[in-house]
Length: 283
Image (cartoon, rainbow, N blue to C red; front, side, top):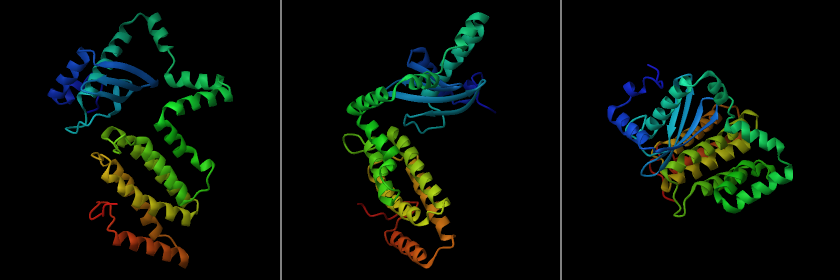
């Protein structure tokens, strides 16, 4: 049965529903933003501040995520509190007079407002704004470097190493650790890097793709020593990299590339690097 704004109370664990309702009734849902039609970013306060993402099509909940560490089931009390909020908001919308409903529907999504303002800003004004952000936000600086460093550096394994280094710096706290909540963003960004490597391979750039894949396997595995990968998202990136390496073993390579592939795989085997992480020696 599909999860909807009308039936979620019947489909979710009773204790979680009760806790979520208490959070909603106590006003812990503090900020709700519809970024695109049917896509919501919702802040829920509790023992900490958590971010909930919901996608609603009609009344059907098609996707949900919360960055809290709850692992007792697919939905936590923060998601339920957000669902109660949207349920009430949905009822209020349909109970409004027709004229007020039309006015509410005309409200612009955040993404629309952002696009309009970007179009209005001059190039110089935008650069000033970005520089001001960089001056006060180390994470944003590192994310910017990771995203655009290829504009000033040739594609190589060194380029991918710099991208990975910038991403790790962006998500690491002052104690040198990547917490549960930051790991999801880091894993998503690493996956994008791996996708770039795969595209290189598909475009016939076999040697740089091979070198980048092996480098990333070794470096990403090291993250396990200071990243909370409770959800297995970093491990998923490593599995993705091994799929690329497996693809390489099925390709017709010249003797030089074949020997390099064999040597790299032998090195990985000797270091006992695997998708299970068994036997990895601490860096």
